[in-house]
Length: 144
Image (cartoon, rainbow, N blue to C red; front, side, top):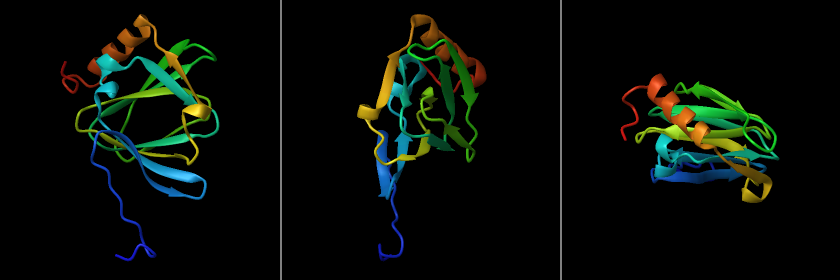
């Protein structure tokens, strides 16, 4: 197909990869990688200049939203449903746990980067909460 008419893109590798940029926006894919296994999640991030939309394409995922300014004070889990859109507001802490077969489509501002985002380390109690939550909400999906 002529790319003047339609761009056709995919990404099947591990982790995060932008696949289409246009004007001020970007579409990216987040596939499973070891860092999003519940046992390995050690931090949350927030983007200071953009909302970020997550759409679960396949597999299973639990989105974790954190309240707090400079530290996480409370974490809210959200089991994701394929095809539903989850718009994480600008400045809101978040992370996601993915099963090995999972893929998430992301839509965000094109300039979203480490330079305009913040990261916070999770406490041992927060990490335990994430691990227990995914095992309770979706038992058997995350083998050790």
